[in-house]
Image (cartoon, rainbow, N blue to C red; front, side):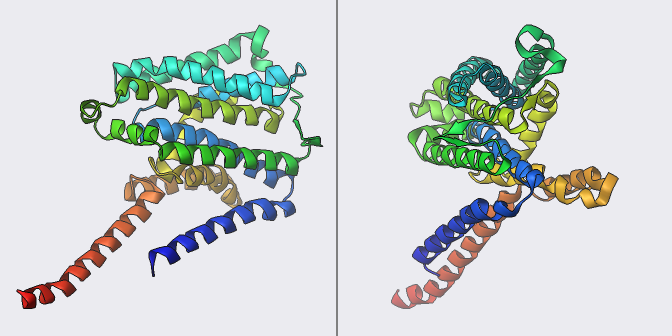
Length: 333
C-alpha cells in the first residue's frame, strides 16, 4: 500500500468519525447526550494536561483545579447576566496567568517534588471553592447556570449544547494540532527528552517550561467554562484531587505524548464505566482491573501499543528489503 493511499485512508477514517459524532447522537436520549458532552469537555482538559505532561514532561496534579476555576468563573459571570463567551475569555486569561505562576516551581524542582507542589495548589483551590461563601456559595454551590445563545440559537436542550461542546473540542483540537507541529511544540518535546541538551541548543527552557504550564492550564479553564453550563449546577466536590487524578489517568491510559491519547483516555474514563454498569456493583472493580492490566501490558498506554506494533512492522519491512538487496550488492561487487 502506497503512502498516498494510506494518507487518503486516514483522512477518510477521520471524516467518518467526525460524521458519526455529528449525526449518530441525534438519536440519543438526554443522558446519552450528557455523557458524550462530558467526554468532549474532559478531552479538552486532558489535552491541556497532555501538553504539560506528555509533550513538555512537567508533572502536574493541578489540572482539575483549573477546570474548577473555569467552571466557577463561568457560573459566577453567567448567573449575573454576562455572556458565556466573555466568561470564556476571562477563564483563559485567569488560568493562563495562574498556570504561568505555578510553572515557576518547575524551574527549581522536578518529578515527584513538582507533583507535590501542584498537589498543594489543587488542595488550596478546593479549599477556596468550599470556604469562600461570598464568592463561590461554598458547599451550597451555584445553581441555575444558563446555557448560551449562539448566533440567535438557544442551546438549552441537550443536543444543541452537545454540538457546542463538540465544536469547542474541534477548535481546540485544531489549535493543539498546530501548536505541537510549530517550533513551540518541538521545543516542548526537546524539553521533555533532555533539558540540558535543549538548553545547549539555544532553547529558552525557562520560558518554554512556563508556557507549557500556562497553555495547559488555559485549556483546563476552557473545559471548566463548558462544564458549568453542561451540568447547570456546580459545587466544590467535583473539583477535588480525584478530578486531577482522573485527568492524569486519561492522559496516561490513552498515551502520554500522543496527539490522540487524550481522546482515547477520556473515552475510557467517561464511557467505559457506563458500558460496565450492567455488572451493577462490580463495574468500578472491573473498570479498575481493566486499567491496571492495560498499564501492566503497556505503560505507554493504548497508543503506545499501536506505536510499538507499527515500529516493529517498519523494522521487519526494512530488514526484508535489506535481505533482498544484499545478493544484488554482492553480485555487483
